[in-house]
View 1 (cartoon, rainbow, N blue to C red):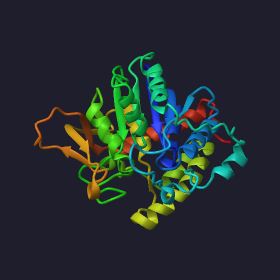
View 2 (view 1 turned 30 degrees about the horizontal axis):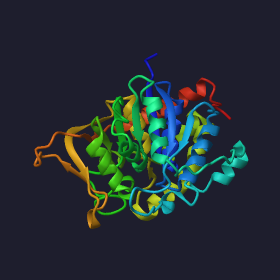
View 3 (view 1 turned 30 degrees about the vertical axis):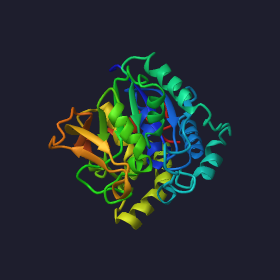
Length: 332
């Protein structure tokens, strides 16, 4: 067995975040050190409880869950309830709790000294484990707050992988902006300018090619009925949204691609570039990628533009099937 990769996930747990969490937990390649949640797809409270639901589904009791910022750095929070539903969980949270058991209602809003708490949370894991990869699949508010509080917070981080942004393709929240960067562009821009390592941008250029269809869900159910049924239920709302607003039959599952990229780095390819995120007006949230090196600045990012979608789904199927065979209740 290969050495596990140590990762921290920072997320705004909605539908595709839930699938990314699931993939990281069931993959033997990954050692998930902790999960921090942030407001984005849904409120930070919903994100916290949705993460606990994924833990309950997988009978995972040992991963630390940290509640981060409830709002962006500057602007008011605008959530994506039209995409992820009122509960951020595809409107199945009540049904889930009835089937798997109610989660403990222990959410505590952590706004007081949140920056200091985030620094401690991140440093405890990054500085005390080997080659930690920080995976940010929501707005980068938590990361920016930690960096602002302690510029050396991520000095020992091995990699930062961000699901967000777009380069050649149009946005999903504005003509030029992807949702995570649009929600808190000030945070994203701060991280790009102050990260000690290149930010690996897993943006819409590649995630839009990862479309979960009903046929694929049926394959998953045959490989592991328990997880397949969960995926089917939580993505129903997501599929309806994609059909109505984007004329896509199926749904784009952005966030699991960031995890798959860590497991198998041959899935994605791209190039190094200097990148910043626009904080202003009509271009708010746009990831400005200097692919032609006009600014003559040192690259601060890796921009992925090509994806092997078949390789992704084969990996996704494989991890789900292996989890079932090793005792993850294949036929429950």
